[in-house]
Image 1 (cartoon, one colour):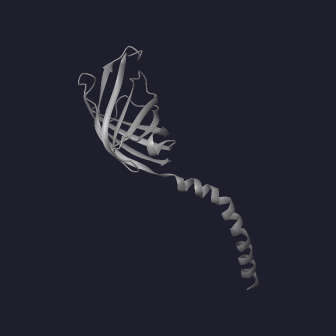
Image 2 (cartoon, helix red, strand yellow):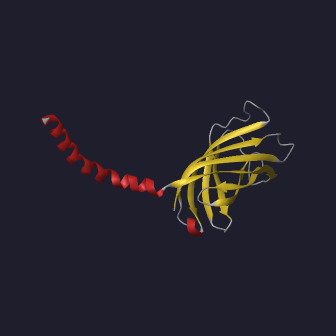
Image 3 (cartoon, one colour):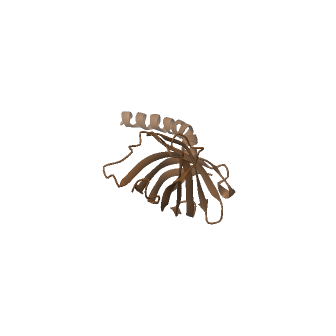
Length: 170
C-alpha cells in the first residue's frame, strides 16, 4: 500500500513537468494539417536549349483534389535529366480561388525504366516553400508518388497520376 502511494506521488509530481516540456512539441504538431490528394493529367517534353546536355524540358500539367485546398491545378516543369537524379524542381498547386502553394521536389536514384517498361514510377520528396492568399508563408512537405505511362520520347504525351502525401502549416 505504501509503495503504491509513493509511485502515485512520483507520477503526480512528474506529470506537470512532462506536460510542460511536451506542450511546445504538441503545439507544433497541431499547426500541421494533412496535405494529401491526387491529381492526374499528362507530361510531355519540349525542345529547350537552356536545358543541356539533352536540350529537353519535361512539362507536366495535372488537375485533382488536395486537402486544405480543394480542387487544384498542379503544374511543374524541369530540364529533362540525363542521369538518375531529379532536383530543384518548382511546382505550384493553384486552388480554384487562385490561392496557391509553392513547393520544391526532388528524387534520387531514379530507375530509367521500372519492372514494366511502359510504366515509370518515381517517388519524390517535396518541401512547401510558401504560397499566396491564405497560404502566404505556408510550410510543410511530404512525398509525391508519380506514375506515368511511358511510351518513350517518340510519343510526346504521357498520361500521369500524382499521389500527394504530406502536411502543411499556414
